[in-house]
Image (cartoon, rainbow, N blue to C red):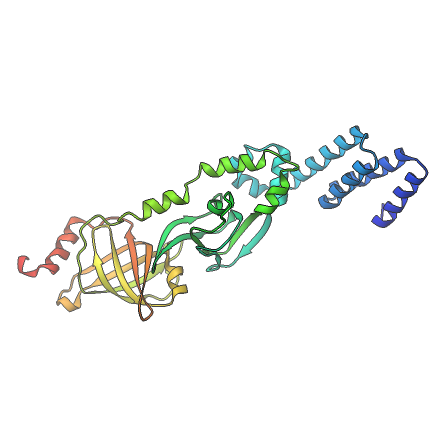
Length: 339
């Protein structure tokens, strides 16, 4: 079984000789061969040809369809299936194959913008590897909504609606591998797997809705009283294992509470976006207040606010609230006459 064009010529010859049975048998053999060689597009095309040659060859049509689905199922990336076991557990084998082979594999480096808030986009993203940050820009402020990882979906807020405008932005925080489903491709899948779209929609409905994340994050994060103190902050970005990943930089302390702080730094919009969701180690000093107090703390960047002249206010939430002793020391700096 060599050249496809030769196969087609032979099929046409059989048909001209009114030997439909031979044409059907040749097509069945070719379909099985291509399916087992994982040439699924070719196998599907040949099965369509089988329909054309003899729509009443129901036994052969059903048999070849089952063989294709079994071969497709066996060739699916096992790591992907394990990551998405909950999703695929709701699908039939045919729906599973239709979804997996209907998605496109995309890979991106760290700090790559997948999409921006306000863009028109009709894509659903399934994360197989890596981390991403979802954030919302409110006027000049970027607010971290969520850090995303393997087994999580994003883009659903625009994907299942006609006005496909992205309500958030998503940027990679590491190298990532994504499976991407286009809205137009999902519509085509309905011809083969009619229940797939409804099941996928139901699955996404059970996830944290972007609207709920926005509602929660728009609330005041630091309900503790804030102290406006002049101070310096030595900031060290940390990696996944809490090891330094870049040179430390200096910033100006703006305010601090028991649960977080804000500092001012000069940087660029791209660099400020990179900071969102980053773990930081911060050492605070108060030389301007003639104090030798040092406060060491760690936390995560939850918001970035743009200011004039390339200055940005970075809002960090502490991993653990500052102790009452430290807060009393800071209060004493604020009100030295009461110390």
